Image 1 (cartoon, rainbow, N blue to C red):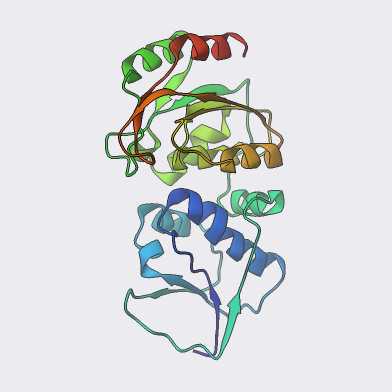
Image 2: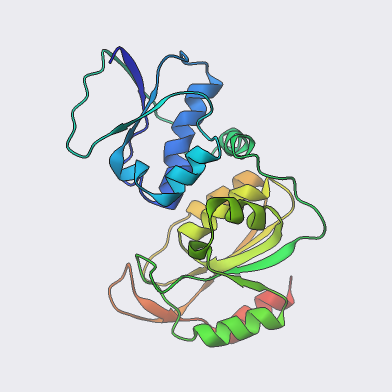
Length: 240
């Protein structure tokens, strides 16, 4: 192969890493005018995911050819473009939203509480989820498990959400579809793990952000179940 743009990432089969680390490379390639004859080279691990296929169908890669590299396949490339892009950069998010034809926000905006489905790869369930759900609904939140939605449905839903709350996890990546309209993010953290990624993402997009620590972890640090402090969450909702 004469040339190719490498879109490899070790965790490219993860929703967050795909949108923030893989597509940021594609955005750099397109925004800086790399040769149109250079295809994107994508590993099968990434390409086999549902969200990759749906993003491709929605046109995120434009007219540029996409070549899938098999798991044990070696491809010789004479000139390879290896891109390093900072994952949290507003122009990349705008590029992604433009390519996916994300609609402009309308109305006052919905309140979305993001649920972690039973099949969530990393666990982190709330043992008092029923209480959390009842409280969220009493404050006008719609309960949503994004794993049950297509990418297009997630785009439509989160683009219209002025408040997005939920546990730390890949589903919060969908906040980027709000397209910088006013939004408030409420992230629930387990005391055994966490990262600043969604705080950084919210601040880059100009969103209000607050977090709440959950209680009484049980299990291994990365996947432990916890309990939400219902009174503390109620105070957060009262202040919206």
